[in-house]
Image (cartoon, rainbow, N blue to C red):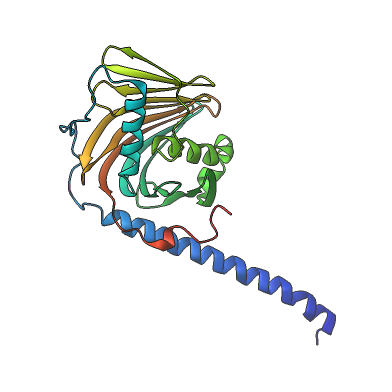
Length: 262
């Protein structure tokens, strides 16, 4: 017969194990929600490529204030986004991961990203809220690759920039250069905007560069559907091509736990 003290010591450990099991089960359930939501996105339809975009309302001689107002209005028109994309993630010019991403975005400050490999195996599951990225799950084979251990939080931050989840910088200068405007802000921040199309072509901030190769009109808004993220500090590059997209849809609230970001 076990001593009463031993039984008492085992009880907290058992409770802790049960809590960990419950947390893992909740993470798996949320990941299934991400996959199910992504599967519902325009199932089977090809992504529009180089489709005509609606007029921006800007002319080639527009002032800085008008261009910034246009960028702010474009962001305000986008409330949620569901998308599926193919990604080639190159890490330190040595390791390349090819994956499918299932993305859910709730503007203005959060997204959920589940990345899978061939056969639907989850490589990682990220939750980004209010500037903070939490790694909900990561495959052991991916976690064992040295450079990737510190990559996920930075990847979350960089994707937030690409998705328009970071605030617009305090632009104080703009110049016209051929078919684009170059907006500048303190700290070496630049944003290049198609002139007069009004879509963002390139963002440069703090060693991070996002280059947009293609946009598409969907659901009355314009969204990026092909872009590259490069980070000079973490030394990685991600080439992203959206294959399915659906803006301004209702997202499952289980994607974003109530305590996230606190």
